[in-house]
View 1 (cartoon, rainbow, N blue to C red):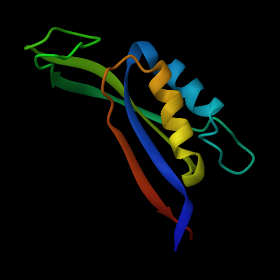
View 2: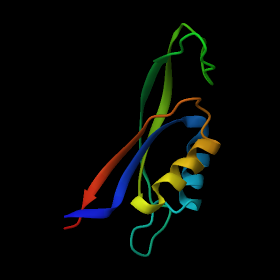
View 3: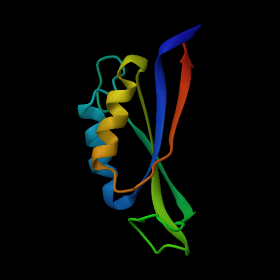
Amino acid sequence: MTSSIVKLIIFVPLTHTNIVREAMGKAGAGKIGNYTYCTFSSRGIGRFKGELGSNPYIGEVGKIEEVEEERIETVCSRENLQAVISAVKVVHPYEEMAFDVYPLVTL
């Protein structure tokens, strides 16, 4: 059975991980039982190339860049998902962000 909770994943440069986690928690993400601000992070390398018309926070237009990032995972209600995404967009430094959203099941 599908739950009313989803898992939200976002990739963030190391300079902004705490700011993004704080915004997610303040917007209501990360509530599990009697706990709030619950997240999980793992590090990796993000790669991209800004095309003409882009304004990359890191790197230069036309050049492939590598950035050390954290993958931040949390949960939130489907009802609150847009508010959490909006809060992240306010503090995240990237011009474009990829959000992964996965439905969860109730066990």
